[in-house]
Image (cartoon, rainbow, N blue to C red):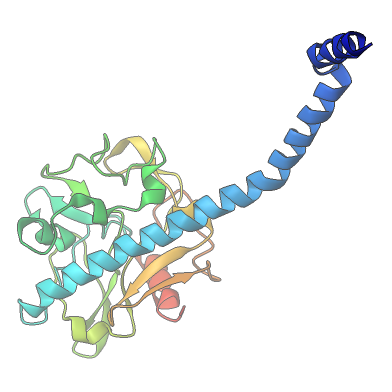
Length: 249
């Protein structure tokens, strides 16, 4: 009798799962994935926002260190002809400009801080470290953290002119955005971008901003900064973006 029970138990043990049981298990797994996946994606996006803000903070630390040793002057303003191109670190005929000045000194030891991890995940993003349209260390390369387009000149606010190097003092911008990961365009190609594109950071959900007092703030797009396209905006529009950003904290 004992042998009969053992044989029946062995046959049941070897039977395995039925098709219905397998379908139930697969359905449960699919349901769990459907429930958890959005949360995992959101968590990853949040992490990338934080990491991008951390890099921007490190840029600020380096820039303020530069200012302390250069009569409170931040690393120069510069843009080319397009309004949002305050991201240049080196430019033909100008050499190292803006944040590029930090690469030839002790103020920073790695190029990683000049780029946003969110953009680094996009293979066709131009504002990545050493991308096809952005060869690091060449005579023409960019950061993912452009400087503001507006500067203060004897209590007057002016737009940074094209192809001209402008100095600026950190003390004039305590309550203003000095660098950010906001670009002012989404899906742009042209003006030297031949292979990849420039995208709005973080899927257009918002942007990180570094103020002159050293604080880094995340902001959701505002009335103006939510209306960006894949073309370069006129300088007056780009300037309006920064005026709005100055109030967003």
